[in-house]
View 1 (cartoon, helix red, strand yellow):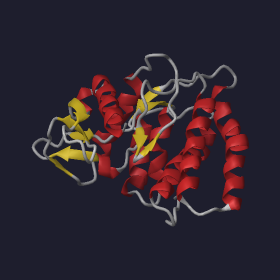
View 2 (cartoon, rainbow, N blue to C red; view 1 turned 120 degrees about the horizontal axis):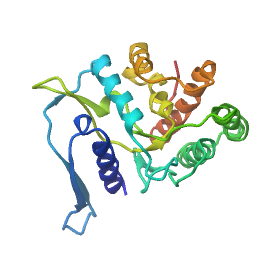
View 3 (cartoon, rainbow, N blue to C red; view 1 turned 90 degrees about the vertical axis):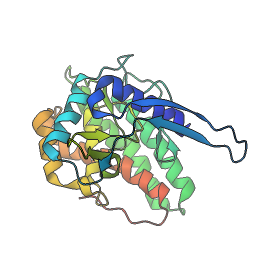
Length: 245
């Protein structure tokens, strides 16, 4: 599932903005029967893992979000992709509020399976799904407003961004893509454990991409989107302490 999802993620991203993505080639299963092993192949690009130039990187990212078009006009993806080792709930949905609720609920389920019981946390998680998400994301679609489903990488931290050594071009890889509200992409830049949390990256991105209305609630939405990233981080790292900036 991870390899098939990554191949389809990278293929969709490549079709939208090929100069930003290493060309995906194929995926499949090794002939050996045990252990059952799968592969994904793409073009090799000799890259540095230095932090990307914020001006070039954010301009390309905003172009991807502006120009990509959902094939159904809805939020979701045509196949299951993964965030780390966890599959994402990506069934097509015309409502961003409804789609995000199901996406986040699935993350809470995985985190609860991996971590120790915490009743207070469960109460807060339920409250976020029943009250916070409808309030914050519902406002995006009030008064005739509509949200465009944009193709996002889905796991865009500095470890999944590289700069080609020969010419300085920036590429993104290791995607768990789906069509979402474009602001979802930069939610994880708020996480304390990411180096890309620098305000300069958010500032550059917002120079190229318009904040959705109501604009005064952007930071609240950004915190909400960060929760999805924090919950999955917790599921991957039980017992870790997660902070937002």
